[in-house]
Amino acid sequence: MPTPHRIFKAKFAGIYPLYVQKAERKGRTQGEVDQVITWLTGYSQEQLERQIAAGVDLETFFAEAPALHPNCALIKGVVCGVRVEDVADPLMQKIRWLDKLVDELAKGKAIEKILRA
Image 1 (cartoon, rainbow, N blue to C red):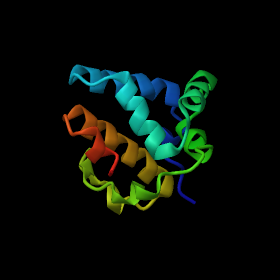
Image 2: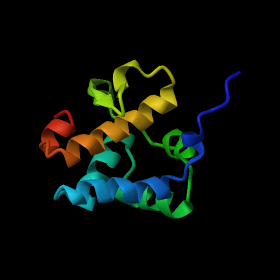
Image 3: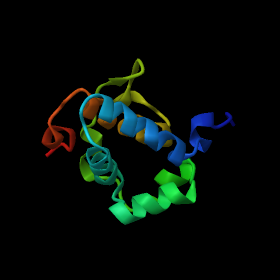
């Protein structure tokens, strides 16, 4: 059995500020970052804040997500040289989907397009 990727045990609370910083450097807001995270995971704003405060790792963050958005399979493209739709590991794919959404936000894409509306 292969060892799980170390990113799975990374604290979501440690990664979240990096997402916010990336978006804010490009003129987007923390609220927009939260919007894409809640869209993908089904967390409410309060649940998201609780997960951050609890210091859960990425594996737990996605395992406890209320419901992945039915349109998450529409998230396509490349993040860090990896095509997100081709990622075999289900947890890694969810992490890459979130990375891709934040990338699109930082690149100035309209929120309606990011949320696959």
